[in-house]
Amino acid sequence: MIRVDVTRKTYGTTQVLGRIAFEIQRGETVAILGPSGIGKSTLLRLVAGIDPQFEGRIDRPDKMAIVFQEPTLLLWRSVLQNLTLIHPTLSDDGARAMLDKVGIANKSGLFPGQLSLGQQRRLSLARAFAGAPEFLIMDEPFVSLDAKTAEVMLTLTEALIAEVRPATLFVTHARPEAERLRARVLELRGSPASLAPRLVSGLEKP
Amino acid sequence: MSDRGLVPALSLFGLLGLWIVAATLGDDPTVLPQPWSLVGPFLQEVQSGDLLFHLGHTLVRVIWAFVLAMTIGMALGLVMGRFPAVDRWLDPWLVVFLNLPALVLIVLCYLWIGLNETAAIVAVTLNKVPNVTTMIREGARSFNPDLDAMAKVYRMPPVARLRHVLLPQLAPFIAAAARSGVAVIWKIVLVVEFLGRSSGIGFKIHLYFQLFDVAMVLVYALSFIMVMLLVEWSLLQPWERRVRRWRTA
Image (cartoon, rainbow over all chains, first blue to last red; front, side):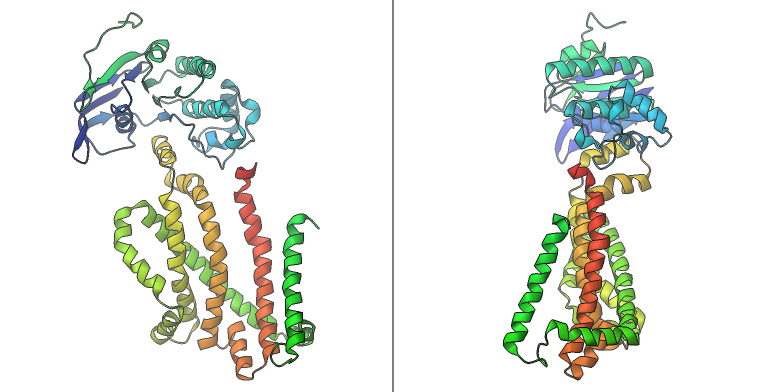
């Protein structure tokens, strides 16, 4: 289980985050919603352990995965190596099976730069799920995609989450995406940002 | 011959042509002999074993200094580029060493360590380290922060991170440092040999300088230039092409 209890995060003298506390159960998806610039990405960096400087406490498992807005691949290593180097216990066959799941099995020998942007994002998704993570973090993964590609990526993500069942934290400013992934929605508001009182949506299971 | 080999070859022939023209106009073999008049002395030096002996000694010194300077410079550059606090402390040192004339370092090394091989290699290494450090630091400052974050979240072990995430991003900077490194190092090695060794190309040049023998100075200098061109074409350039493969694929 992931337990987040942030009391304060400042950049210099500016306080960006106030008290933010929530938990995510295994198999549960939580979406952090809020307008851009509110501090969603800051919160995500704290939860992911990228930025260790804050007041509070965050409990997270060891097996984590992250999907950024950009594919963030090792452009100088092959598509296959982008999986096997990040997950040393993953066999070549396992990596190929994963590439097959996201529909780029025939690209394993190429460099990421030879893939289309959509394929690069699939690879980034494959990398995230290849390690069977207990905790998956996604930072606006469908932003800047055209509607059709976003739909394909959402379907793929949905299927992979259903298969691997990680605790998922996902940051977005698009409520339909959150509803589509049947996420529990937490809204960031104010300055310094904190969680808004929660409205239970009709889609959410109690 | 492919296009890639043709242009450098033609360009080198142009240089040779320029030399022939200059030697013809000067018309004084003691100042500038014709290129073909060096062939005789060259073969003679090869046969006596002298040339290979001194070439070997210089080459060993170049390799030692190169490996040491690249290793130390890369380590320092990486640390200084990644940790601004360390950079603030070490940067003034870097400026001092960058501006210390090669000759001063060489003389001091000989005075402090003695007229021996260690002093020679230390002197050359110290001359090159600040340069490599500066270049690698520039590279380390431009690391992609997202890739860092990715490596951190996925818990990549430090060695894998260095090898597959950091060093490939540094490759253009390493190539530039290695390129200019080899060129500068062999020039400084010659000065070191000139001043205080009894073997190597620099020693022979010192000898023939005192005898005013331009032909032999040229024979020794050109032999080593040929070796360096060979290193450039057979090692450095293929390596660079290999690490750049992903950009052009």
